[in-house]
Length: 190
Image (cartoon, rainbow, N blue to C red):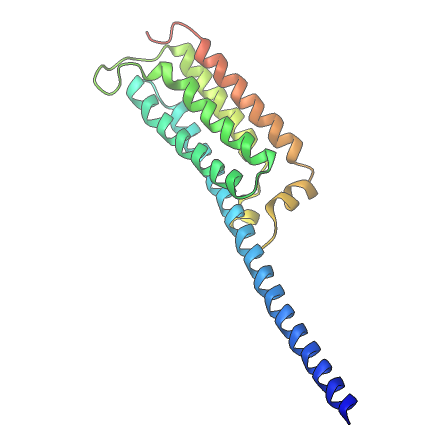
């Protein structure tokens, strides 16, 4: 009789243990899905911010307009840094560096803003259009509709599965390098 009681207690504790472990597993699984949704939305937001900033940059003809665009690239940098802090993947760091370098490299075109209006050199404006095309090449690698839906899928898994990680890193480097060329171009103003 004593063995039946001990066996009953052992079985009951096993059932309770399995129930508690199952509950925490589901809780952890849900938390990971929330993190993945956050990362997916962050990437989609970064891609939109980069596209908007690039579009506005290609239409910028004054130092004041470029200064406004620089703040948008800084916002994109902070967005990508948020993803990198959450999940320290190299892709997120490259995204943050691309946006930050564009903002930094455009800063010589902001001289005098917002008080002293200066018109940008026409060749530099054409370079802005080329930079925007490079930004579009980069952001087109992200399927925003897939990233923007709350599925709980790891966005890095999606990018690796599609073989896009190296392309994203290469395009981020291309954007960074071309923005450095724009920074080094002179004369900057008419």
